[in-house]
Amino acid sequence: MHAVGIVLVLVVLATSVATFARRWRVPAPSLLVLAGIGVALVPGVPALHVPPQVIGTVVLPPLLYSSAEELSLRDLRAVWRPVTVLSFGLVFASAAAVGFVAVAVAGLPPATAFVLGAVLSSTDPVAVTALGRRLALPGRIQVLVQAESLFNDATSLVLFKVAVGIAVTAGGAVDLPGAGGELLLLGGGGSLVGAVVAGLVRLLRRRTTDPVLETVIALVTPYAAYVLAESAHTSGVTSVVVAGVLLGRSGHRLTDARIRLQLHAVSAVVVFLLESVVFGIIGLELPALVRDLPAGTGWWPLQALALAAVLIAVRVLWTLPLTRAVKPSRGGLSWRVAGVVTWAGTRGVMPLAAALSIPLLAEDGGGLAGRPLVLVLTTSVVVLTLVVQGLTLAAVVNRSGLALEPEHTAREEDEARDELNRAALDHVEALTELEAVPDTALDRVRRALTARLDRTPGAPDGTTADAAYRQLRREVIAVQDARLHALYEEHRISDTTLRLLQRDLDLEQAALGRG
Image (cartoon, rainbow, N blue to C red; front, side):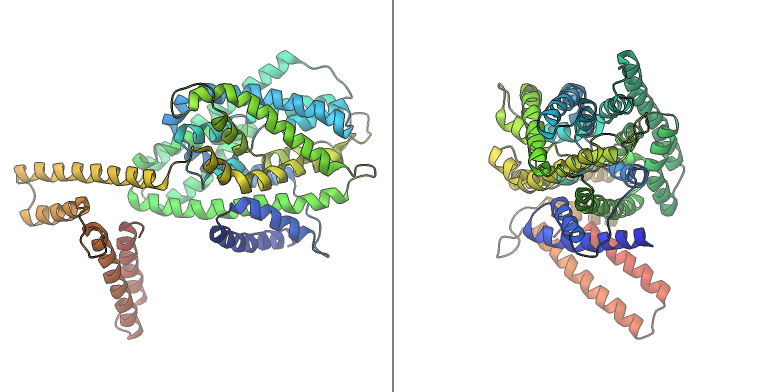
C-alpha cells in the first residue's frame, strides 16, 4: 500500500505540474524533478527506495518504445555515422573523463570512480525525448540527439558491467576481448530479438481488427521485447528500441484510422503516467540518498557540478567535428549545432537505475567503497541536467537560430494538405470519366475538396472559406450535441443510442482538426 500511495501521489502531482508547465511554457520533467525534491523534504514523508528492477522492467519499456516509434528512419539514415560515433566514442570518452575527475575532486577509489563514469557515460532516452518534444528543431538534429540516446545503451551497459566487475574484485584484470564480445552480444543480440518481436507483432496486427485486442498487443509489445531480450542475456533496451523503430513506420499499414486514433490516445496516457512517475522518483530519491551519506562527504554539491561541467565539455568536443553531417546548410564546423546537441543530451532515470544496481558488498565481503557517494553524485548530476539544461534548453535553441519558425511549420502543413486534396480531386475526376459512381456523390466530395483548397478570404476578418466552414461545422456539432443530451433527458432515447450518436459527433469534430 505504501508504494501504491506514492504512485498515486506522483500521478496527482504530475497532473498539477503539467497544468502549470503548459501555462508557464516550461518543460514538465524539470518541474516534476523539483516538485519531487520539495515533497521529499517535507517532514514526515517516508524515504523512497525504488528497486532498479522495477524501473527497468515496468517503467522503461513503454517509454523507450514510444520514443523509438517517433524516430524518423529517413533522417536516421542521413545521420547514422555521427550517431555511431557518439554511441561508442563519446560514451568511452565521457566515462574516462568522469572517472579521472571523480578521483581528483571526490577522492573516490579508481575502480569506484570508473563505475561512476560508466553510469554517467550515456544520455538518457526518456529524458531526451520528454524535453525535446516541445522543440522545433530541424529533423536531422532532433534525430541525432534522440537516436544517440536510444542506441548507446549497449556500450554503456558493457562499460558498467566491466567497471562493477573490477570494483567488486578489487582490481581484477580487464578482459578486453571478452568485453568486445559482450558488447556484440548485447547490441547485436538485442537487435535480433527486437526484429523478431517486430515481425511477430506485425503478423498478429495484420490479422486483428478488434480495437481492444490491438491496444493490448501494442501495450504488451515493449514488455515482450524487453523480457525476451533480457532472458536471452542481451540488451532489453536495444531490443525495445529496434522493435519500436521497425513498427513505428509501418503502423499505418497494419491498422485502420479508428484503431490508430485509439492507440494514440492510450499511448499518450500511458507515457504521461510513466514519465510522471519516473521524473518524480528522481526528485524523491535525492534527499533520501543524501541522508545516507557518511561523514566527510559534505562537498558533494560542488563535486556534482564539476562532473556535470566535464560531461558538457567532453560532449562539445566530440559533437563539434560531427556538425558537418547534421548542419542544415553546407559549411564548416558549427558551434551553434554543437551547443544545441550538447545541451539537449541530458541524463535521466537510466543512470539512476544503473547506480542503484551497484552491489553493496565487494568480493571479500566488505562494503563497496564509495557506493553511497556514487549514488548521490549520479542523482545530483541527473537532477542538474534535467533542471538546468531542461529549463534553459528552449532558450538555447531559440538563441542558436536553428529552431524552425512556427510559420515554417504551418506553411509546410498547409502545402501538404493542399497536395493531398489535389490528389483526391484528381481521383474524383478520374471516377467521373468512368461513370462508376453516382454524380451526386461525386459532386458532394468535389465541393468539399474544393472548399478545402480555397484560401481566399471568406469572412470580413480575413478568415478563409475553409476555416469559416470548419468553425461553422463545430458550432453545428455543438448544437447537435446539446440537442442529443436534451433528448436523453426527455427519456426519448436510450443510453445505447446516446453513446452511439455521441461517438459519431465526436468523430466528426475530431475530423475537423485543430481549431
